[in-house]
Length: 179
Ligand code: AR6
Image 1: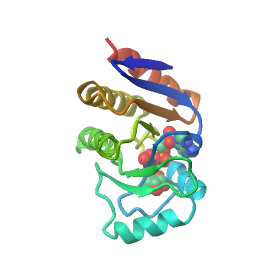
Image 2: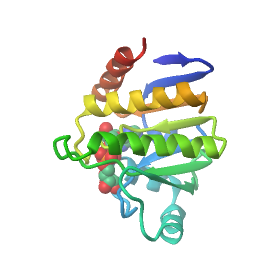
Image 3: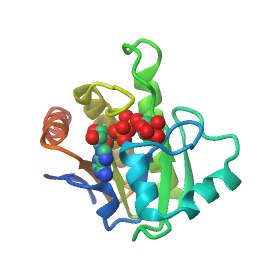
């Protein structure tokens, strides 16, 4: 699914984020940058052990929830990995929507600053962290569209959804947000 936003594009695909040919890949990290399962495990396995060494040496304090830090991308074809920390779902009244949007925006700002024309996001927070998929999809799509409309960058934002359920939730969100 591809949506034009002026000169930019928003794309939804079902697949594995580690296989994407884009300038920046977003990791669904934790605030300790300690690695883990899901997207985090897959990205570190595919990129190689130097990424964990890089996060440990450059970001010994970790990364606060609602923000993102940058590393190289090791053996991935991307130029950068943005390690974004989404919120753990606690019912939705503990600032989770604002934190999820902030983590997404932090990645989009990094992409702009680093001259990345393409970026791939997973369904941040909607796995281990328990954020309901439909709410995460609405939040991430709206945040991205607002950013891209305003900044006209990055040229391509791709959401890489692991299964049909996640893809359906994001497709529904796009239909709701696109005028
Ligand atoms: N490509 C694309 N999507 C994937 C992939 C993949 N290779 N693998 C899983 N997903 P999660 P979170 C989907 O748990 O909720 C980690 O342990 C998955 O089905 O990766 O932000 C970290 O270290 C789900 O829809 O991220 C943190 O501690 C979505 O990606 C914590 O989990 C996000 O699931 C972060 O949890």
